[in-house]
Image (cartoon, rainbow, N blue to C red):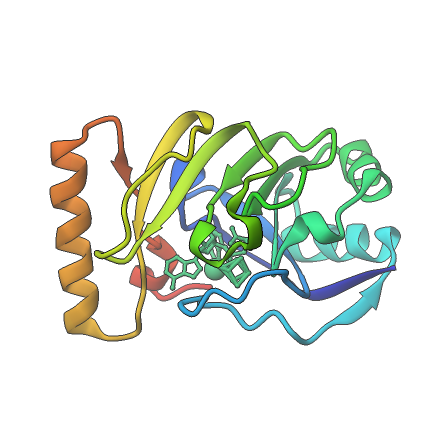
Length: 194
Ligand SMILES: C[S@@+](CC[C@H](N)C(=O)[O-])C[C@H]1O[C@@H](n2cnc3c(N)ncnc32)[C@H](O)[C@@H]1O
Ligand SMILES: Nc1nc2[nH]cc(C(=O)O)c2c(=O)[nH]1
Ligand code: SF4
Ligand SMILES: [Mg+2]
């Protein structure tokens, strides 16, 4: 059984697949405690792989794009769940903090490292599809030696409009000076969807 915080259907709001309809499977629990985390992932329902599949089909209709997130999805997602979702034709994207190995078969890995909050300061991943660094205007920008196809800076939402604008302009300034980076906005918050 998996501890699932929520399953909902929306648009991917961040990164390379921003704008793409996606079923979000949010796992409960995380190994980190990022002070800026915008998600309450504590509550959960115990679900089997079959229960999760049924919920994805019910909520997402014809959509075959899943974002496995959390919390930290690497703590729970395993071969059984991946196999069952693949059998139904789902493309599986995962959002991870990079502290744990991603199981075989995930089709798209988005890594958002938080080394300041990671004990030992080591990433378990070497190669990902997308690096999405949350930028708060103070911490240093680094790709942490990750091999990646896309690399995004995503402004940290600190829940304060004036501060958020300041952080956003810092991101824009940074990517203009370092064009190997691109800006990722949390589009869902801008348009008022989940
Ligand atoms: C809630 S996390 C769950 C997945 C995983 N634990 C991780 O951190 O990548 C999903 C995404 O939201 C980002 N995020 C969390 N809090 C944020 C905030 N306040 N502002 C911007 N992005 C945030 C994370 O960096 C991550 O890319
Ligand atoms: N619309 C939308 N897009 C997202 N992309 C990653 C999210 C996450 O919390 O992992 C997220 C989210 O919470 N909502
Ligand atoms: S690793 Fe992800 S889910 Fe966990 S506290 Fe940090 S941002 Fe939130
Ligand atoms: Mg989110």
